[in-house]
Length: 608
Image (cartoon, rainbow, N blue to C red):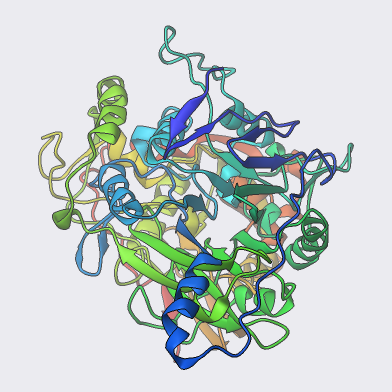
């Protein structure tokens, strides 16, 4: 495949089993960290001694001469949000969208000779209709146009399995759907995904390169890319069988020692795991808690910057490393609404980061302040015509907005929501033929709100199009109805309280109509430390712990993901198939029950 010029550098496409050098960039192969990386002998640093007071200008000049400026532009959790109308607000203004994100990146690159654009994972998966319908080929093409250099993998990058992730990296037509443009087949990613802690159990090697190194003259800047160790609890099991997800701290610290042996002193970790700040601005670090605190405390002190994601939060922190030195730790919200700009000052002779003079700033991507980049408009114009043929078809109707939890909506997966309950209603309704009495829905499976107002397609108020339904519930999971005792159902409800150290302390399941219960939970220091579930009722009758009921869930929950492990204890041979979850939703929205109203958030009585 041909080389492609980007940001003044020539980059070649990287195969999954090798390394390649391109204009000073080195991707280190997955078999070993060794490989032909040349360590140029750096000159010895000059010593200034005691300067005459009049030599201050010269000292400043020498300081600049010996300092390399490197800019990192980072984002995370892009999730295929190419269009301007899907990401929602940032700082109270419409934000994100690939056309505006590209313009912001270009603005920030101005005047910065040494600039790299990086991502902390979840570039694909959980995507809106325009990208998700085409297995996220549009997302990768937009990231190529954005000038992305390197990215860690994230849990959603595995939504369609490891083999599909390889196709996303290397290119080629989809094995089932084929080529959407036969004369212009999908070419793959110009950037490199890194997967240092994802190991093939057969070969005992990482599935993708663990590290990536960019050289600026004599200075080498190294990146370690990882997803969270808990990824197997967050994705469907079929696509990751035979792969091991290892501890983030142990993996990174081992690679630090190897990188340093090859002359890399500036080390950046791209990690798809994060923290949860309390309320504050996008550039603040207010009360951040969660897994990232312990991970940072355990990471090798030679790691200079930690760029994170996963929690869809924005923060800009300076946390202490194990030696008590300041270390920059950032996260850039989600959907391309924020860019973290990290300006590193690096000693040209030693390759070490001058942390005291390095800095970071989180920038909002506000549409009204930016002009769309035509290069990204071209990507949208390529895919929109073939998506609109399917997407603008009406599938049902609603009477009002049906929203996720939190303020802004979607911000809190720990509360009951109209959206979660609606999906549970649809799934129970669609599987009544299986005898389903109750259905449960994981909050992370609902990716947008259903809005009453007409979209730009002009379908009319209250009309739900296929594109809107797909964006609302994009994963294409399969439904199953399974027998569960009342005691097992209660155990599932208690598992909403997530294990200590989880990115989100509580995951509130959507429940179908007629199922109610009382809930009391305790959250301390960002962890769920206690939960009591009581007064469980089904259609006004107390749930009998010894009686068996028919319960419908999607295959994500049936596999025990999101730490709802009780579902996985049910014998799979007892499952009765219920079709695709999106079909259940669209059939329900278009049924004789339509128009469908918000189901309400009074099925769970949360006690104070």
